[in-house]
Length: 388
Ligand SMILES: *Cc1c(COP(=O)(O)O)cnc(C)c1O
Image (cartoon, rainbow, N blue to C red; front, top):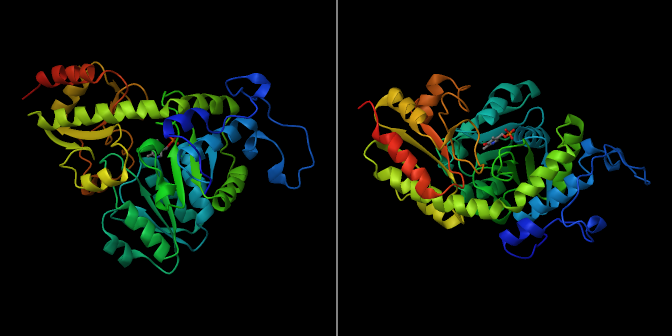
């Protein structure tokens, strides 16, 4: 494993920067060139071309991202879904079987349930907290186990260490979507995961202005995924890479602020008489609080909660809150909230949502970097007026 020096705050700024600096530029410039002069490349994948993920902006960024998770290498992709679908289509082939956590990001859920079958790949959903369930469901043709560090939108934390042990015991690839935790709070490679995938659209970029993704892990596996991506074509444009590179530099300070603020907000919400339930791993009431405390460096900026009074009260609250922007997505500098039953998880069948515990009233809340007291003051005024 490549070791990278300094704390994550320092690595976010300095890892992967060109040395010597190009033309003396303190900031990595944008290489807005699709192709590069041929210089004796031996294979197609070595030809320098934006789609082949080997031009300077993609490479500098990949090195920075690998350093953040203390992993060997990384691949930058055009979106989180490009990272996820390309990774799955690399480790799985016709006849293979996947074990996947039962409550996944909506796009991943839909990819697994609607697309994998067409490639001859089968799947079974598992309870991320019940290794006995995995033992019952694993098959001779199972090739991979897929979980999310912190699940969306119920903010569950699966038994991550058991996932790695189980994968090693059954010779499976272990893949984790680390988007919600971010490398600041959890670094999958340090715990033995084969692959970490990200929607870099969220915390890594942090400014809600681009779509991008990343695959982080061991060199051999990431190289195979790169070759698959070279064919599927989900490569990141250099200008978006430049913006992501800039965003990543402030990742640690943003997430540290979000960790702190979210914990205070979750504690405040939990005590509020109009709130019936708060899902946040930093709360003692969270079923995996002890695990999160042990494995994470912070509990993250994501939570979800339910109001008393049904959908009507929920919608009124959302319309009266002034500071949080009602919009899908997450991980940016601005506080965002959304109702997953209407947005990210609207593709699920109603009965599946109910079974998983995603009520129509559930609000997902992504804490930004505004002052905590301003967010709380706004939530307080929005909760005061209600139809109770
Ligand atoms: C947003 C998101 C994705 C998909 O990422 P895109 O960048 O929108 O393609 C995947 N996983 C999680 C956990 C997400 O939040």
